[in-house]
Length: 154
Length: 213
Image 1 (tube, chains in turn brown, cyan):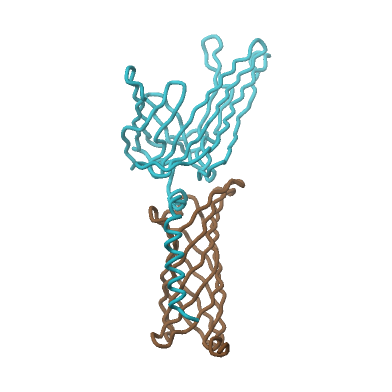
Image 2: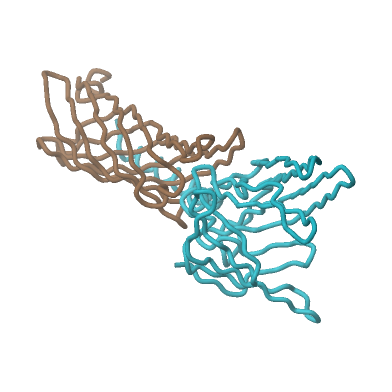
């Protein structure tokens, strides 16, 4: 049973850079992100479902300021294509800090993009380009990003 | 892995967090609290029914002071000069002293007027100090600004509004005398609008109308 669950599972790690374009560009210069994900292929619909945990870290124009977003999300992408569209949504714990003074809150994020898949045996390497948005249902902000991911499939 | 269970868990967590999104942290992170463009204006009025006073602030065309581009703020005829840099808003300050009918500059420069972005609990402190010699006598000048972003509150009309408490201190010391003045006021800043209310020794002023370019 455990073997059946493990077969078809994959795990991966992603990291990349983001450039604020909407809203966040007032006070932020650039951001970095990383994600750990664990997922399984849904061969009926030919999609891959991933649960991911990660963080987005933005540097402020003011050197003492930073915005950190800790994310738990669900990503869906098409499996068999070389150029694969993906969609991700999740919930976020957000902190902003200026000279050790901190505020926190919650938000929702979403991302839509495209990744290019390269396979070497069980290893999948995929550079991605995407737009990532975040909202608290009153205001929206967004970034353009690039990232590279490595996944191992059992 | 049962994806139906995952979907139900996510729906539940989304619902819980939807309720908790009420503190609008993205609104505070992704909005400009000090719009600074030529043509912006804000009109304020005090809450005194018997002696109503209006204050109009207009941003004039760019000017250059001490090799820095500044926006002149015409505050009902009184000009203040502001410029923006990576740390926030700076104000041009000039302290002068009158001798024999002539005005002499004791000190001039830029000080932090408002550190941006606004984060509750943040304190900012900036000062200018200089001394000059007049006919063998030294005259010292000092300008000190002490600010605190005390808190933020949700306003039904203007959104997440920050309150900033500012204390200003000006001192001119001559061999014969010390002239000191202190000023204390509160300012309230709203996202995308700027200052929507201020309280000083002249009263409590609230925004009546505004225009942002």
